[in-house]
Length: 178
Ligand SMILES: [Zn+2]
Image 1 (cartoon, rainbow, N blue to C red):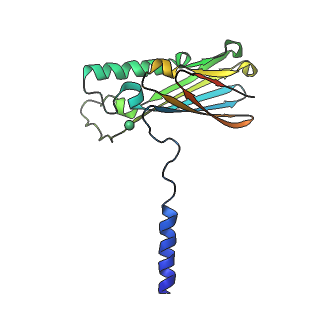
Image 2 (image 1 turned 90 degrees about the vertical axis):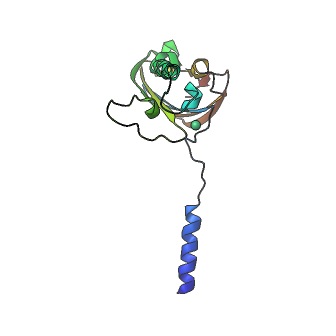
Image 3 (image 1 turned 180 degrees about the vertical axis):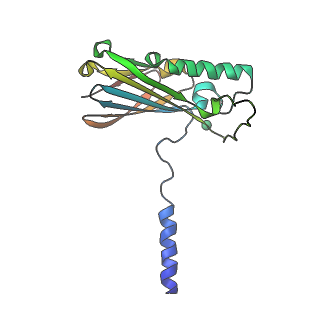
């Protein structure tokens, strides 16, 4: 019985030590993008370390940092300036979300929550395309907009399954196979 207990404990230990590197790993200079195409609907999700966008990963402490944060968010909220699509596909933005917890202003009277060493920004761009069959590529303006981004790992999910593409500066176009 004693032996059984010991081997059970060993089993639990080895089960807990799985691979540590998962999707969404935080690497400075690397941005991950998920593109999902479903009929007329196109969704582009961007996950970026804040360092790659503004050069810091904490609440803005100076006027210059506040300005950098505001400029980055304003640029990312302009969906058609970040995700450029073939005009023939007649895509219209339907929803745009930009979220960066660390850059949120702290409401007066409350204390800022403790932040870790790293922080990310997530952006989500939804489009509806009247002629989705004309959509040949998704052109991402992220390298142009943010000098600190070096690499973009893109995953595309569509009717024909999933593909992965790695973009290195200055390449910006993700070809779509359908
Ligand atoms: Zn970081």
